[in-house]
Amino acid sequence: MSDTITSSTIRALPESIGLNTSSLFIFLATCGGVALLLTQFGGSVSEGTAAQQTLRDPIPGLYNTLQFMFNNYKFMTRVQAALQRSRAGVLRFSLGPKAVYLVAGQQNIRTVFSRDLVHDITNQEQMTRYALPTLYKMNASEVRRWEADRSGVTKTPISGTEDVPSRQRLWYNYEHIYAEYLGRPQYMRPLIELYNQNLDRLLDLYPWGNGTLVNTLFGPRLVELSPDFVDRLWAFDEQVFQLVMGLPKWLNAKPAKAHDAYVSAIERWLGDVSAGFDWKAAEADWEPRFGGRAVRELYRWMKETDWRDEVIAATLGALAFALKSNSIPTTTWMLMEIIRDPSLLRAVREEVATATETDPATGKPILDNQKLVALPLLQSICTETLRLRINFNIMRDVKQPVVLDNGATTVAPGSLLQMPMMVAHYDEAAWGAAGHPASEFWAERHIRYVDEPEAAGRVRKFAMAGHPTAWFPFGGGANVCPGRQLAKYEIFTTIATIVSRFDLEVVAWTKADGSTSPRAAESDLRYCGGGPCPQIGT
Ligand code: HEM
Image (cartoon, rainbow, N blue to C red; front, side):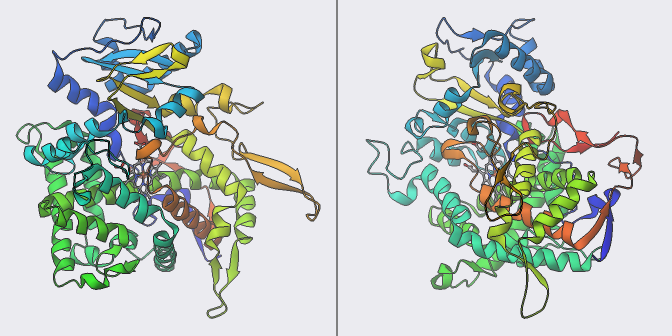
């Protein structure tokens, strides 16, 4: 091992694993609520069936809404308790004028994410109302194009819309391009190999080097043209919440400014790499101009369907943001948990060594990616970290009546469904074990020891401790995160490379400004419902 990393230097790792991160999908939670309040007062409240359970509202129409928006952690703690008391799986409350159904429990979660209801429960209204006009920079007539596409998200168009030309099926193409080109092993493989090489090169330079791993998916030219691109990305990241609230620029100029600076760098890069691009050579899984196939295909489709360059750049900006905004905090939390426990660090190193080979050409150690992502202890640590630290309130719009809770609740069209991760991921009944409550990180929670005849002793196996429907850090159904496999490779590679290349020890916990903190980092609960909980030390 060549270098020493202390906990206080963790923030200097590639991409400056600074953790002031909110999330692309925060609009689906709190700011959605704010925007609803700002734009919709006076709208109708949908009614459910009489048997439904309702969350008590101490100041009717106001308290729940305000607590949901401004102290989502406390709100969800109340929801947890109310669900437990009532033994219901669905709880209704009003968010401004909108009826929201909080959904929990195996059967309900399975129903909501099921393929059978893919056209009845969608994220389309969330997109057209909040994301497209802000993050994607679409004007009113552009948003109307999405609203007008009623052909659905599946390969087979909804009955009656078969005459929509296939490339004009906006929802379908958008989801399909991501699912195909981010998720298929063929397209992921070059990204993973390149990521390994880039990470290796960056760590060779540590602590003097400077670089970014964005170029794995976007190719090197983006950062060559805008060397401050990563700074622009984090500046944008800080403003996402405010941006999606959609306040006019004259009231709050900062979010739009950060977004403009970020998107303009991408637009400039797109102009550069598309000029004279040989589209016949576009079948390559990775090429240096556009980088990964997902980026190129999205650009090609959006050009073909006549989107403005700024809109295309903003759409790719949302992708770059999605690429980084969850993986980096997850990696950092995992590293912290591993480093703070010397026996766990030792066990992880031993496990990583079983997935490491020596490159016959260079004599350098190389990781076998397939073996790496199957390592039981690392899988358990990752599952546990995602369970505890990823905290989205996944939202969906109801288009047709949906029956939940074994028929006890019928949710009317126009309502919102919300699947809060906090309720499922912290459920004691699902995850608790003797001496290890659900609220606590336990590296071995998802490990079973089994006897194997050929092995010298008992062998570790990965087995998720709870039911899979109680764990959905990547969302679910048609909109499930298309980058989830890529994220796993990235995260595991980063952890494996760092633990095997550096001497690591906890020297002191620090605050964001670098000064010493008397306690270990904790989740910043202000981000509850908005995605990854960043660390705070006070
Ligand atoms: C720990 C890492 C990650 C977590 C926890 C995560 C989580 C999520 C979640 C919760 C959603 C919304 C799903 C839903 O509504 O059901 C999402 C969407 C998305 N994620 Fe990830 N993600 C991660 C990494 C990545 C990576 C590495 C990429 C790669 C580029 C990516 C790309 C996307 C995209 C493009 C969407 C939007 C899909 C759409 O609009 O339908 N994510 N992610």
